Length: 294
Length: 220
Image 1 (spheres, one colour):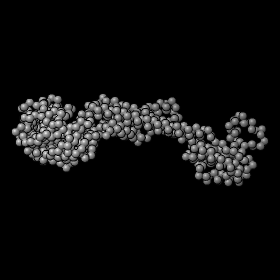
Image 2 (image 1 turned 120 degrees about the vertical axis):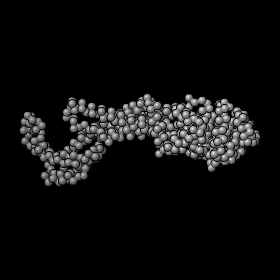
Image 3 (image 1 turned 180 degrees about the vertical axis):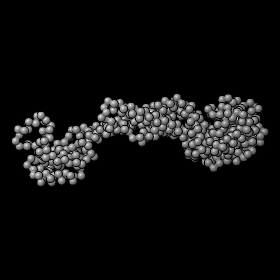
Image 4 (image 1 turned 60 degrees about the horizontal axis):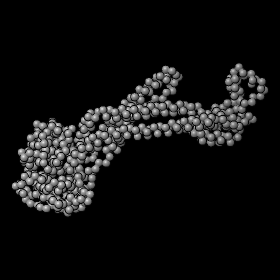
């Protein structure tokens, strides 16, 4: 505890003595963490868009036109009991024709000339969002197609595949950027602490000769690194929040419909940024100080 | 208290010592002397673990220094006060803070640190310079500040490397009297010096190092 008190006093003195270098490091860390914060917000919003799209993803199962009403009822019951299916909507031949008329509008005369309804009855199935993997959907479609009375299945295979590619790329991008920022922040603190360590090498040598333990020598540098990372993180979080607020206001101004669609970053994530900065910086300082030899 | 047994030390195959053996008892005041480059500083470094021997055994108190692990070195050094030849006072700390540093390393309470440091600075007549930075002190004052730092934690052993090397005879006497006082309180004191006047007529043991060996051991 007493060593901590000494370390704090020493760290505060050093922070003040090297204020310009510390300020530079704090600003560099805050820029890095702001970039990370901005990317997280963009990823969250893209993910939310993808999630909304996937919710409306459906599979249309067309029935054989000669299929009996009893068989259709049996299939409907089967789909409703299927654990992979979130929603089932039955569209009869008549309803399908009605929908076609609605779509054609004034051109509905085209279908008037047809004596017998050519449209099949169908089921619109909504699959559970966690199953929206191209391979899983393809398997499900093949499985349904095998059922007696099913004529054809339509679903947006390419669209689903693109959706998954975008989502995967975003997640991979987040991992890479996160790693990049981690390395950058750690390196910034590493360089700063290395300079301080080098400037104080005579003092450290004397401390060692007087019997200072390794932690007695290391802790002031760790406190200084914590300060750089934490304050850099606070500034980074505030900058991210400011940029998000400004950008979302502008977007809503031009596209009012987007108001409910913009996904904010949770406040807990903002609070996490300074701690992430602090941890990265402390790691940087530990590498910079290295192994202390007597 | 300090025991060297068949200690050999070389720098890049150039021997500094070859199989030297000697011992210094608890509460003794002794001198190491010899020409420049004889290895006086190296011998002190071997005692506080800044250098390791190539062979032989060094025992200081309860520590077998020659077999000491890196992490145990601080506890040895916390029990040894060292008066360095080049002072090693920290220029960004006042005299008070330089002296207090030794106690901070020991993890002492700040009230105790204040009391002890003030008492020691009064004793060595530097209390009026407590808030002065070392670069504004004279050579003699700097030397006294270093002695204050070495004695403030009441070490078992005090090592001094050419403590009067940069001092005029008046200041040298003051410093020597300080060492006698410290020794009188029970601290083992070992002084490395080439200044014969410092030990002549003291009645203390002198070890004369030359040509890699302790050539003479006598009472001054």
